[in-house]
Amino acid sequence: MAKTTRSRSAERLVDILLELHLHGVVNRSALMEKFKITERTVYRDLNALSPIVEHTGNGLYRLIHSAQSPGGQGLHHALANFLNADNFFPERNTDFWQKLEARVDEKHILILSNDAEHTVQRDIRRHLAKIEKSINNHNVCQIVYKGKTRLINPYKLINKKNIWYLQATENSRLKSFSLSQISWFDIQKTFFTPDENVRELLEKSLDPWVSENTFTVKIFIKDNISHYFLRRDLLPEQELLEEQRGGVTLRCQAAHENQILPLLFYWLPNIQILEPSWLKEKLIKTLESYLSMERSPENHVISIT
Image (cartoon, rainbow, N blue to C red; front, top):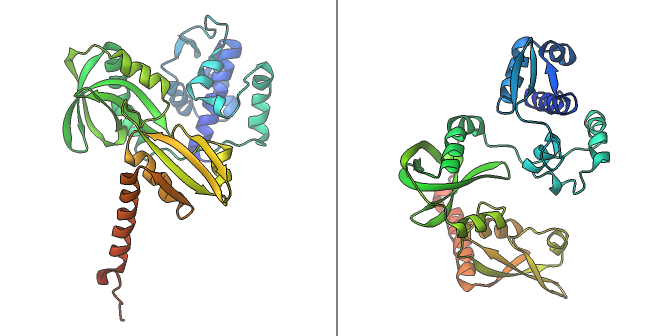
């Protein structure tokens, strides 16, 4: 299967970044020859790197900031940290970076993730610059979210499972707003003082579902699927309470019912909510509503041709 235009562009950008780090400069004509692409395509690639790359004349481009950080780590380390690469490669030592290019060329290692939202290019282009400016300057912002106008204090932009969320407070309550649902973003002339408790909470949690007020969920999982939960945490702040005959009992913390219920629906019928009772009732009522809809005569119309 041929590579997509997006994957070829991503590989070129990584290659350009590595060359910038190793040599400090790239040549536009040399890139055209190396990748067998047009000058227009090179311009597009370099424009994508414009926040960190500048034109120095004669078709040469260099990093705006020094390739080396104060700690002696290069741009590739900063990029890996930005992409949270340690989830896949915990040790990013010299040996790893020396083998990286060969691994990319040989394709014997492949990392897959969820596809990005269809609107991500539009959303980032429309809102990223304003969001970063408002976060840095602590501007109050007005947004239109799902058709409703809101005033928010923005703190952080986070990407989880390839969905972008803006974490902000509204009326002193911390919330996460899906970027694809923001149809208007305007920076106000007023400012806010960041809440240190909110900042600390966001630093601790790498999840868009975050709140100062969480609730505890206790779950029993049958042994035929329990190994999925034992080999990695599938639930927020997951904790093993007991391994017993027939399954395991886990405890987790949730900030909202919508954070936990879709996960539980996925693993039915091999999972059971023990606590809290209101969440168990919500799950049962949702299933009953679905079954009622399926049994409705309107859903069983036979077409005769």
